[in-house]
Image 1 (cartoon, protein in one colour):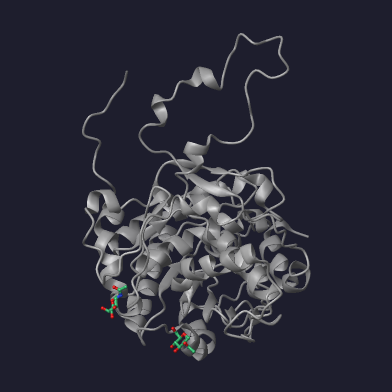
Image 2: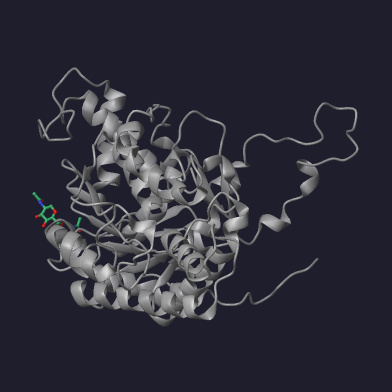
Length: 455
Ligand SMILES: *[C@@H]1O[C@H](CO)[C@@H](O)[C@H](O)[C@H]1NC(C)=O
Ligand SMILES: *[C@@H]1O[C@H](CO)[C@@H](O)[C@H](O)[C@H]1NC(C)=O
């Protein structure tokens, strides 16, 4: 099979394969693991109680590293941001070059607890645990529908019962939420892994790579994926789109996306609670094949950096998509640009780097924050299950990241791994107010350090 087909073929048969591949392993620690990080829950409508400079810390935009503990639990992986203070810890406690006769020069075990404690809250792990407890207690059935509002006696131990109640409180803000992704199949696969963790089979909309969603009934949460197939401006005659009849964003909008609008409107009656936008892998394909065709070449060259005509088309088309989304959902809908993941084959990286840089610029011009996913997992080859897609090993980083944005939109405040405020009860109606509280800081970056130290 020619390399260029890898991305698309891999997408076709996946829903069958994938739902059986993930086994949910219940190694979720007790809630105790989190409670020390869970400070208080104010009952207020605004978050101006907080000093912005301190409250507005986006762990996913801080320098850091992806951490994959060696456990069987696929939801253990996390992004670990690096904050001031880590430089002060003495390296000799973990590294000693003199110990050459010892078996190991240094310990490669777990992260120090104080470092791990700064990592963002693991919402997806908590959700998975709550899900298991609700199933075990017969509160919900296997399809995720409520069976009982109270826990019938005898199915859970007293500890489990208490744990379940704690998780229900902790996660109540997730109820009734709508996430919309307008992006490529990397998000779609992660959506499938997420839904599988909660035993939901996703629904595949009509058409080729069109729409894909899953709804978790007892949470009343919907994840909707609208697949865009590059920013091409009309269906090209060159062979690549053989099975795909509808390719432009405009046509896909009216043919595929519009019929699903009712599923993505959240509690404000107007918009989803969060939109993630991204386009990259398909644009790279499109430009590669267009160039090959135009120059009468036999093979596309994905190592070629993009030219100006390509970059400009990409940027202007991205801006139109953002405008279309705002026209539909309102100018204040929380929307982020998710950085494209790079193909596993490093020789393909340069054009996607170009696309990502261009996308960063457009995000800034259109006042969108950056969800730096592709960048965070750059080079982690072990996560890929084919040339383009990240497997379930990336799920907890992917899901906790958008859950972090969602939490913030609902008025939650999390700072350096600590939950400072739970979303207030009247959360749905303050979506844009909550979002805007930190938005400017997140778009422009945090202030320069006042007293840099180099000792
Ligand atoms: C929280 O706020 C609501 C609405 O303002 C109010 O009705 C409720 O009594 C408050 N709850 C507590 C615990 O203060
Ligand atoms: C489910 O969520 C939607 C969107 O937020 C909301 O409109 C609807 O009222 C919710 N349904 C229930 C039963 O709460």
